[in-house]
Length: 481
Ligand SMILES: [Zn+2]
Image (cartoon, rainbow, N blue to C red; front, side, top):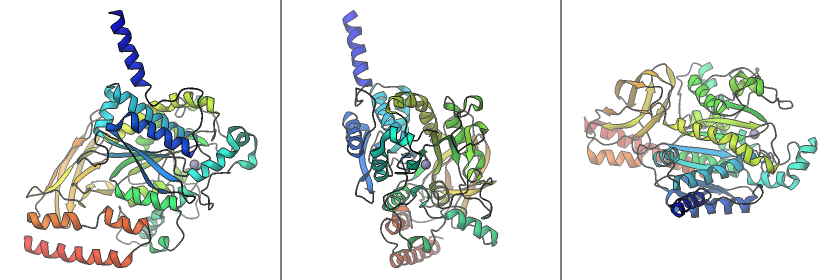
């Protein structure tokens, strides 16, 4: 009996520590980080996939560890989530936290932990520990000690190798939205077109890779990990008045964003606790429950958060994980303890609100249909399998699904504790099966637009695709009636 019990304990211990390094805690350079990710992938081959979204300016791979019960494929109806870190190369904690998280999800999945099993089985999770490996290598040259003692080195390694602040290298869609509003144009409230002027300048390799990635996968929620303050930041990052450099700039989803940011802050031991807060030098944000609207801090053009919200379906917050951008290695285990529950709780928010499929009356799924919630001027669109996820705080909502002139409206209830409420829609388009499959494969969707994003913008291809799709859509609409 005793021997059996000991064996069980030993087995549990082994499975819980799989892939975890022993010895003193330390930072991982680019080569070691890749090895650490491979170790997790090797330890949990059934639920992981290691892939790269491209390379940095100096040729380092931008690795992603995917964790899902069916790695490598989008399961219709299952939401996709991303954590990304180290976009500022000298903000290094998030990079290590994502390695800890990868280890944790792998080992707890193997140990049949019910919470982690549910997360991995019901979510496709993508982790990028470093979006700026070149910057990290510079910051690491100085290391923790030098970094802390020399204010002259404050920004060393922050930017990419060409000096680009990657966080602010994204298409300035906030400006597009606000300009359209001010000019009283009919305002498109989602998937705004990236201005041609954006493509005419030199965009960082790291940014191009992120744009392609963000538009290829149907991400629903994400967070971008930073350091230098202790607060969860939500969009807009851009102020609505160019002259005003620090005024609140609310999105149509302000209540939802405050909930998302607050979820992280409240789960953290000190982020939301005003009395216990440490004040970071020169970054004295008022406490406000540990959350802050980006523009109310300082207005930032071309931010990752604003691009995600206005250019894709993904909601994203920026997590400032502490005053010290380069904590001492010995502090890493404690910092992981502080952030483990916040990281898990925030990840679970990808399952709030409503979700479902939009189909036509023949039962075929409809990609590219819009989901519009009454009272919130921000629609989201269905993915390639006709599936959608609309994050919402609890309440009763009038929701309309529409595609062209076809629409259906229904009431969807979001409860406080439950997982996302299923709200499916049927649009009476009368498209035949053949017509529909053609549309499904030719609708200007994420992958089509990605080709322009990945390399150079391809106007001829885009125009040709648009003309073909429009003609076919009109024909099918007429014939299908
Ligand atoms: Zn940062």
